[in-house]
Length: 152
Length: 355
Ligand code: SF4
Image (cartoon, rainbow over all chains, first blue to last red; front, side, top):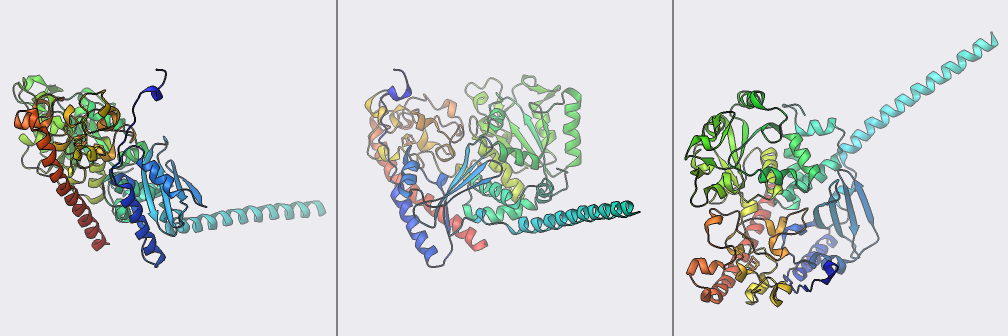
């Protein structure tokens, strides 16, 4: 036996939780289509046999959008082949999976720019503009001073 | 982080974006076994949280509980939570030793009288105070002295929660749990040998977030993590219900991933979160690795007979009752699954009513 593949283990298990979960997603998606609230499902909250999470992922497939958030480790937002159904995977800085959610929504909340960050952005932008106009003003003043010197 | 600064102000000053904070809160809500929609409430509560002082005492233990916590698979989460508490005394982790270490404990107690959190791992020997001492002080005296001014106590690991292995027959040191000594303080038992690290952090996060202790079961354990037994959440359960058991560790049933009941699995009588939170960076847990559950989060797990005989042998004295036990368990299982679902629905409804 040269590798783990050589061990004759063929697990047959199935919890029977995959299909109900997919139906839960279908119901949640109908609610979103009707303009109602989205749903978030924590994949860690229900028992799944080895391979069942992969089955869910394969069933949902990959859609058009994939976005990555890089903070305290990567978070990947993958829209599945069913628009409005997102697979959101939060990882830590060691790349270990912290949590996995299925979000049924038009846009996952964390993808949206947050109000506090926008406000902080405004003040940073104002500071940056003030600093750059100060630099520009002093550059102009020094050019003007040089011209007066040259003409004198 | 300064002691009276809120976590929100501290993180803002560190340049942590609101989005990053919300990611942390989603993971923390999941850690506390709250529904994902609770992340916003967690964010509001955590942003206003102040840094509590924590004193950690280690008595008759193997340091496995501390090892478990420091090997946790979520270092960013833990480091944020540890940044958010002030771990003022932990004799395995702190740099200070001898008198200056003890001085740190006394100073933290005086400065935070009535407000600090006391974490204990290890059991306390009553047989002879000399069996286990720290800086010449018996474990019993140190526990009584430190518990006096604590807001609450977290007994980490089966030794602190129920006496654990030191308490196993014939209990040579007269080991007892924290709750057998301290009776006038709220105590949370985070049992397990060792406990799942994220459960330890989850209880700390709960205290930090809501300033209260989580709901507890009849053994003082947080319901969020110990409310369901391993068997209820086990992916091998369909085999149990069909009566398909592995009889040895290398037979056909074992290779096909059938139920480990006959090989001594204590899942049906063990309450813990291993089946969902798992171990080693969320990779696996004993049953998924082909070995039955030892029941390490239950009182006296070491004295309940062999790890390799079925529970039915201990309960009813013969293996012949096994099939009957499996059938009864199957009926019970349906009830437990419904109860679990009802509990979850109730939690969701309460959470929705609040929001
Ligand atoms: S007896 Fe053990 S292996 Fe079998 S279903 Fe219950 S917990 Fe899982």
